[in-house]
Amino acid sequence: MGPSESKSAKAARFTTLLHHSRGRIFGYIYSLVHNQADTEDLFQETAVQLWKKFDDFDPDGDFGRWATRFAHYTVLNFIRVNSRRRTFFSEELLQQIAEVHEREETELYLARTEALNRCFDRLPEADQQLVESCYAGGRTMKEVAVEKRRTVDAIYQAMSRIRRALLACIEKTLTRSVADG
Image (cartoon, rainbow, N blue to C red; front, side, top):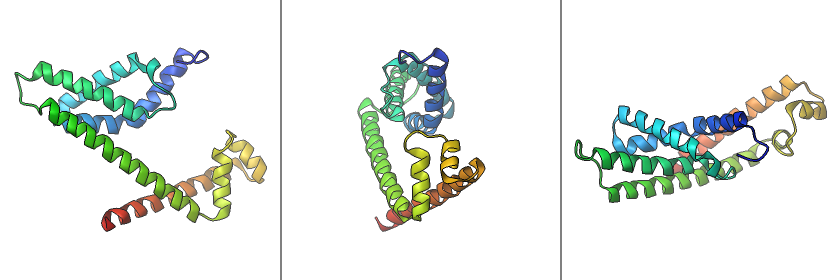
């Protein structure tokens, strides 16, 4: 927590980051334990540990990757405690799964970033300028609307259209690269 960040702001930031990374963390845990109930319990336990250590998180870092590391150790501890009752993967195999997961995640991130850059370059110049106006410099939509002599609603609608076009282009690009590769 930064010196100027209130407890409620910290909690809101944590909640947002956890929400956005939930699928990634949950999927990772499930890939290791293959049991829905255990996965839910381990996700909750991981979330508690993440909150306790949230002050150690680098705000410029990748929360999902940081959280997945916590999940990994939470699962290892769970397996150690419960290994007599059930059969689990060995620690060595779990480590290999973690390494493959991280490598594939990095490759997917790089592929998405490359696809986004290509798709952004394909946008009409006016759309590119609007995106840059909205996301560069920390301006509000209202400030952008005044600058562009448009209503705030018109800016939101245009950005929504542009986001949908970018998403469709990225998905098409990634699908094409999977089919080619």
